[in-house]
Amino acid sequence: MVQILDGRKISKEIAQELKEKISSLPFKPRLDIVQVGKDYATSLYVGIKKKVGEDIGVEVVVHEFDYSIETKDLIEEINKIEKASNGILVQLPLPDHIDTKRVLDRVDIRLDVDGLNSATLEKLRRNESDATPSATALGVITLLKRSGIELNGKSACVIGNSIEVGQPLSAMFKNEGCDVTVCDINTPNTKELSMEADIVTVAVGKVEIVTKEWVKEGAIVVDIGINRVGDRIVGDVKYEEVKEIASFITPVPGGVGPMTVVSLFSNLVKLSSANE
Image 1: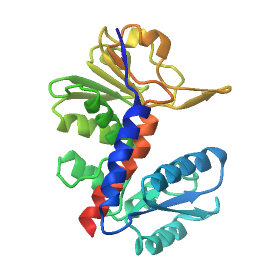
Image 2 (image 1 turned 135 degrees about the vertical axis):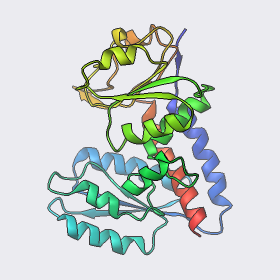
Image 3 (image 1 turned 180 degrees about the vertical axis):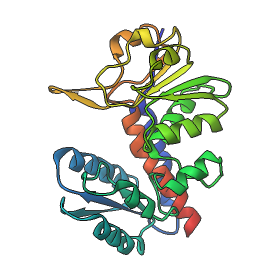
């Protein structure tokens, strides 16, 4: 019988642990969120992070910039913000006219709570102890471990190779002793590679693209996709049919999403404690 990987439940447990840890610190950690534009989805996600942070004792400061801001000006603003911050999060996606990589690489790695600076990713690939993983990747690994899943020796197929999710997640799986295959929807044999894996993670932004034909019996399936279909939120996995053959599966919503948010604050506490 399939077991549901309950990100809501586990994220609440971690939030309580962080709240207790933060209350014992001699300072109040501060997270600065950089938001460009005010579209509904961006504002919603920023609001969720702000609420979670404040609930556990973090000072959360949101810096809103006009959609038309240029790359160099945004970098200058981040330079100013860094002086009083314990951690900086650039809310993605940024507008198309902004050089996202250049902006992310400008965030000081000592403040990079989302682990998206290229230098941070390289430290993660080298399995350095002070590397800060992306919040989503950390959320996935933590969810699996806290659910009692042994990672060492398993094969993992990471579908989606983005800098935000796929690349750091594949590095973390390797660091945990997994045999990792990375592919995306344009890889010719993605379905076949997925069918062979003990763990399948999906983050490609394609509605229910992964069906039961992509998954072997007893596989662990982690759906990182978030897609709006009418008034519903669905993932990249066809949940109802895949859960019939998986051993573990994440729901959407309620799986990886809450873990990503709480992992931001795990990273913040780690970084701010190290830098004080």
